[in-house]
Image (cartoon, rainbow, N blue to C red; front, side, top):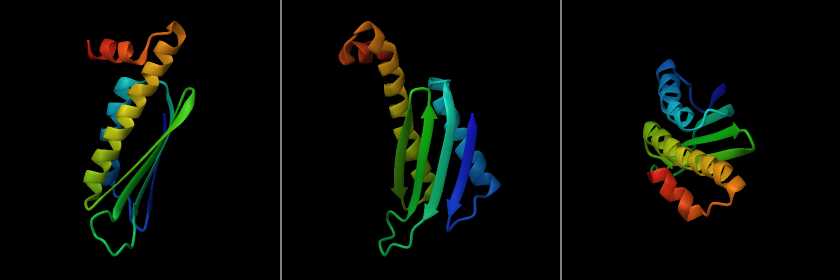
Length: 115
């Protein structure tokens, strides 16, 4: 897996890089066919302070690209929300790959995942 972490208007410190890597391990636990991950961390100059820190991520997996973004007052909270969104998208993609071949309905696929 290739991992690119970049920052706009922000320096990516080793602590921040380690935090991103530790959070992205959760995605690899669900789906091992990840080819490339690009993470963009940025601070926007908005007047509203609530959603100033943004985190965006593009995950290239076998078959498609998955994109998610999150904004929050705290960059670490934005990363947590981003990884939650990506995790859901990766699990949905994996279920789509598995159930598409055999014609299992989405409801049955969700029930199989919970079991």
